Image 1 (cartoon, one colour):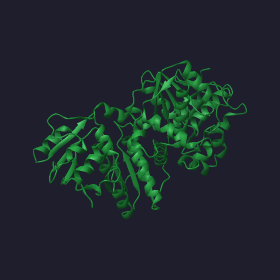
Image 2 (image 1 turned 90 degrees about the horizontal axis):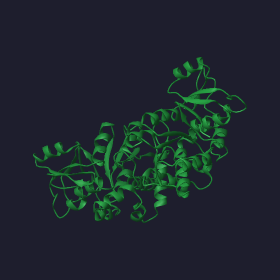
Image 3 (image 1 turned 180 degrees about the horizontal axis):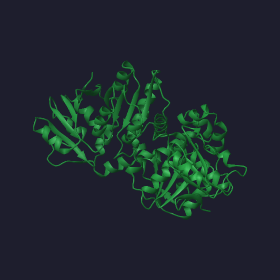
Length: 239
Length: 239
């Protein structure tokens, strides 16, 4: 039996022991959903970078520059942070440099904290991620990207579902109050996540930015079979 | 209508706007429950201090020194952090200098962040606190002390109940995902909080330290009619 903890915000990372644990980074709307989609659509890898300058520099080395700040596309970038921009062959055999408001920072933070493995978690590749974790048993931290270090409902919902799935598979347990809260949120959400999330702050923020299609897409479960994780400082297909 | 936010850990405080807001600090097990009890039992005031040295210094000035670290009483202190130590006239007309693992730091942090008013929240004086907030309408932050900057269920449960009560009174609303989560936890807890909290990490920690009576006491609702808040850097009876 391995242990699962859920960190509802990246601001909680310094207070948890991370070494030798798998860290599953989740930023449902939209960084990790886009990363998983990009890898599934044949991108070679995704490199998460902290700022526009670093993305521009990598563009000079042949990368596609991708990203957003406060939910909107950045000037001079090849693409924003929508999973739909990764489809129809646009990222096939390409490398992506991605910078976002919340999610991309978490990969770097998890790496600095000494994580054993770092995965990109999303509803899209939930089954694949659950299976990988069952086959690579070790204590897990689900790291919710939140919104500017505040907690958010959609990442918490994913954390609750991943935790519940692993517990139901009899491979994991939890004594972590963050994980228990996330499972409570999952129970309260019922089966219609989109309806439940209508009350969430981030959902409303993205609605105003006309990202409704993205949100519908990002809540679909297990439509993608790949596991995405970090190897040699970039996010690649694990299987 | 005023807005309510819930901060599930003190680590989230730097990411929320605090100025001109009431901050309700909550550390159910046990700092704020003990503070509210002490004031109700006739203590002149409670001064929250950050370390044992400061408490010892105030003892020289006539204070009762009180506190715990990791749930246990501290050597050389007049008392620990149990509400029962405040009863039977022991704190009547006395000043207390209190230092604890989690709760006491939050008062200082809220003050430094520029809170309009700082209250000590507990289940014990829930009705009185709700009434005071209704009569002093301003945006509110419920600041959960947690455990060493980790989230915990019992403080979240109080935050959810206080939020729900204020919303049900038609004086407040929330767009904060932390508050929405806390209300979900409240719903999942049902009416038997003690039973629900058996799964929580802190409850189990205190159980091991034989604080069962304290826990039963700290979950009683609205047995105390006083409101406790900060004035001139110390916690006093507001009404």
